[in-house]
Image 1 (spheres, rainbow, N blue to C red):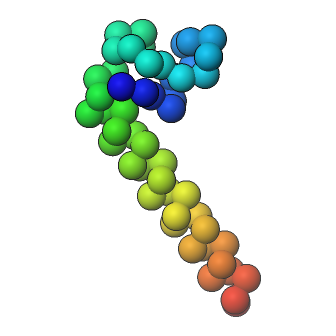
Image 2 (cartoon, rainbow, N blue to C red):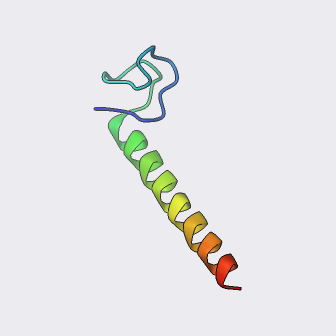
Length: 51
């Protein structure tokens, strides 16, 4: 598993389970939420520019 949110490793990402206690499901759900929020923010910015 690779976790993009891990701040507890020197390489900027966790490659083994157990450093922070998250399992693969939680890491995947967090990635999905971040991806969705970035999409919402991009849509909002574009809508704001259009008026």
